[in-house]
Amino acid sequence: MSAPAAAPAADASAPDQTFLTDVLAGLSGDPKSLPCKYFYDAAGSRLFEAITALPEYYPTRIEAAIFRDQAEAIARFVGPGAVLIEFGSGNSEKSRVLLDACGEYVGALAAYVPQDISGPFLETVARRLRNEYPGLPVLPIIGDFTQPVTLPDLPPHRRRVGFFPGSTIGNFGPGAAAKVLRTFHDAVGPGGGLILGADLIKDGATLEAAYDDAAGVTAQFNRNLLTRINRELGADFPVDRFRHEARWNAEQSRVEMHLVADAPRTVTVAGRRFDFAEGESIHTENSYKFSRETLHALAAEAGFTIETIWTDPREQFAVAAMTAE
Ligand code: AVJ
Image (cartoon, rainbow, N blue to C red; front, side, top):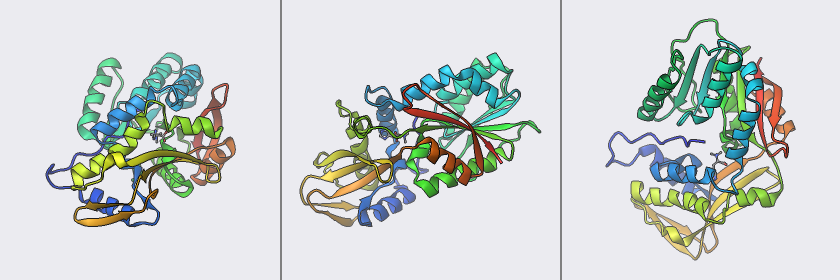
């Protein structure tokens, strides 16, 4: 998937206040943590792109295969003349297979609405799509998918279908995930649809390898968060002294990423000191994994009913099509 790009600070020399507040709060916690949404600066976005090409990181490849294999069924679920809204659209790459399939099997969409937090990037992507899909209204909206969606002027009386691929939903704990889906429910309205990509529970070795690859790209991606904090918030993390760890937490059904201090360390962030014991970790990400049952329960909590779950033959990844009640 394309990573959600970070919004550039209005004044590049002034640290982003929200970023600083979030980092100080996370490092003041016990256990220490940092929000995973800050992974995606320019370097982090590039590293994530590299992760999606790793042999161990199966989700991107398998989801793409499901979209290809089920293109016709997915297009029929979207339906003729619908408005497709992609939340956190990035480079809109995953929508192309849907746009193509709708054109081929059910007739053109009424509009494609990519939503992303990076405005300049959105416009570039929209221009390219308008060239490649002449006649398709591409109506980008700037926004954060965790906030209520303000839709552009849309053709009236059209079915709206949300699209949220990549198992980005896995970054949210059970309650927060239902809240995110609820904002999508509000955006598509009763009778609208949602196509959701979600990674499935599997053996711990496969899961841990996907988040701790042999080439060390995920380790770089994780540590880049400290590099970013050093640069943007004037911190002094000895980045190489924090070891990358991926742990499958079966009880909570999530892969956790951590950065573990190799020795007792004191770090200063914007003039505040944080002490680390040897082996103390910063919990940087949760990537929740689902079963058919937990997907049905999550959908229901947000007011959706799942119509179909498409998977690959080994049931590694799921694409769920659901209807808003
Ligand atoms: C972008 C949240 C789907 O959890 O698999 C990949 C992020 N972190 N490797 C995921 C990620 C480490 C990814 N998501």
